[in-house]
Structure formats: C-alpha cells, structure tokens
Length: 311
Image (cartoon, rainbow, N blue to C red; front, side):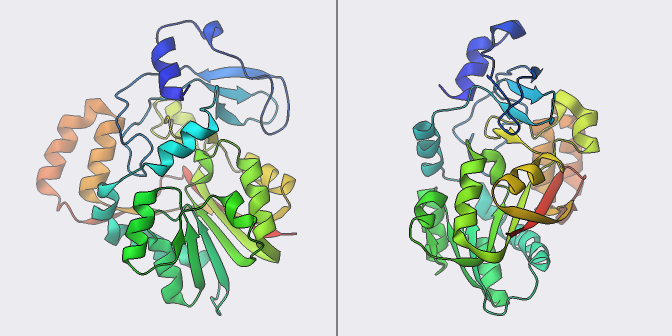
C-alpha cells in the first residue's frame, strides 16, 4: 500500500488508528510519536516527479524521541516504489534545464579539482549534473531509475544507465566521487543504499549528499505547513541525523552547509502557490509583472549538503 492510499484511507481518523513503527530506523529507539498526521491531497500522476507539486500531502510521519529522525510509516512496498520511479516522465524538468545547470555549476565547487577523477551521479535524472561534471574534467557517469530520464540523458550523449545503486555496486567498479543530489529522502532504505555507495567508492573517496533539512529554522517554524512534507519524501534528515547514518555506513563527515537551488521566477511562484494556496492571488499578480524566465537563487536554509569521506 502506498502512502497516498494510507493518507486517503485514514483521513479524518484519530492518531491511534495509524500503524505504529516498531522502532526508529536510525537509532532503534522505541520512543516513537506521530509528528504529522496523514493528509490526503490531489495525488497527481506526477507524484514522484522531481518537479512534483504534491506539497503537504503525505502519509503519517513519525518522529523519534531519542535521535529526532522523521520518517513516513508505513512505507510503500519496494516493488511498487521502483515501478513508480521507473515510469516517471517529467517534461517540466526539461523546461527548467538552464536553471538546473546554474544550480549544478555552483554545486560543482564542493567537489574540488576534477583532475580526471571518476564520478558517479546517483539519481542522475536527465543527466544535467553528469554533463556539468564532464565539462569540468571529471570522468562522469550516472545511474537513474526513470527510463524516460535515461532516454533524455542519452539524447545528450551522456553515460547514464538505467540501474539501481545495488546493481552498480555488484559490477565491482570503483569511483573517486559519488554525488546524490536530492535523492536520499526518496529512498525506502537509505542505509542500504549508502552501504552500496561505500562499496562503490575507493578508500578516501568523497560522497556529497544534498537533501531537505528537517531540523532547519524554516522547517521548525512552518511545522505541518513546511512544503517539503510530501508523499515522495520517505525519510527526513537534519544536520545531526544524516551524519549519524553516514558514520554507520563507513563514512567520515567533512562538512555540512546549506544548498542553493536556482529556478525560474515562474516555477518558483507556481511552487509557492501550490504550497501556500491562500497566497495564490498575490503570486498570480506577481507573475504578471516578473519575467517568467528570470533565474532566482533560492536558499531558505532548509536544504543542506553533507560531504563525507569513505573510511
């Protein structure tokens, strides 16, 4: 059963009706409390797209009283989740191509000199970061579940395979750098995926993981109104919990910092309208006076990137 179905089935029920997780995914504690009740919403076909507008519609989100990790429970079945991501098509992402390149060119500065180092981008989508890294001198390739996105990357002449992290790890290849841009929050079992990343990296290799920061000031202030509470986000890390999981899977954390996305003004105002419906009229008026394609850097402190070294 997927989380959207759970949300619809349990809409209006009292918290005790929700299936309770047996313990915390990260620390094993049994001190679990329901943090955000399930909320049904328009569950569009694009629910699992990178550009999904399904904000604040999700299954029950639980919090650990010991380590603070937030995660959805129950989780969707693995086969259903893989099938959903494999079928994703996202034309809106193509329309934002120029701004994705701006985002990734800035993120490239975190990686240090290319010097021909071998790089794997996990969840490469249409391959834009692979392209940016290749231009900078990395021996770059990617893996991606969406068959449509892999097709888009290959049209650009990029090396992006329709593979999971586990499948890539079984090949025995090794990399100097692995990047996971806005991927880990979508994973049903991030520990297993990070263990696969550890097997893929040479000793001393670097891993860069960006994700939403559930412990940020913005997330705590907005609470249940935080837009990144979404059906497709299964685990919500913060600056304390993600390093714990990285340490558990063979990494030493080197840095933690905020992360900036660049988007068009039209895309930003559309996202804000979907996240905060009462502002729709005001945002509509703003769209009429601001150039639609104007690039807007967005950094509210609730997106982070954690860089680590394989021990």
